[in-house]
Amino acid sequence: MIRTDEIVITIDPASRGQDPRAWFPEPGDTELEIGCGKGGFLLRQARAHPRRNFVGIEWANKYLKYAADRMGRWGVANVRLARADARHVVTNCLAPDCLSALHVYHPDPWPKKRHARRRLFTPEFVAAAVTVLRPGGRWAIQTDHREYFEVIRELTLARPELVAVPFDDPDYGTVAERTETNFETKYMREGRPIYRLAFRRRDVT
Image (cartoon, rainbow, N blue to C red; front, side, top):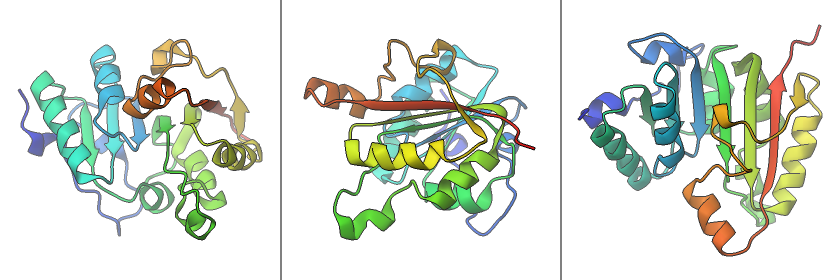
């Protein structure tokens, strides 16, 4: 059993160049999931890869508390969770080349036109995400919203640093095009189509 106050951290929104590898007692490859919800995906990956470190950002406090309690009960020491504005963290707070993988599954599509500015995916966010990924780092994205998917695809394919790769990669928690997040399970049960993308970052000179 691990105390939840060891799992939940505070990310200083005013501090630049933060390296999430420093948030763990043991150095290692560090992956970030944006919108980790109840933590099911992170828990499976953290248990499967105890030498890697995993960070989850979640805005909904009730889900964050649930996920933290879950990690504590399983005694998972290689996970840190934070309630924060993920777009701000990636765009303004993280150091370059600090992540080995980035997971973004079912970001809020904000479907009303007047709310579109609240979406996670903007040109600025995508550029920042590329920067915080190390060369060779993986970025996996999944959504059930077709219009948002088209926006995401256009933004990501415009980046020469990103090379499209198969979504399935058991080493990064995707098997048979499943991430088994709560939202994915719910939407598949409802018969919604799921749209997926995955990339590797390359150096562009």
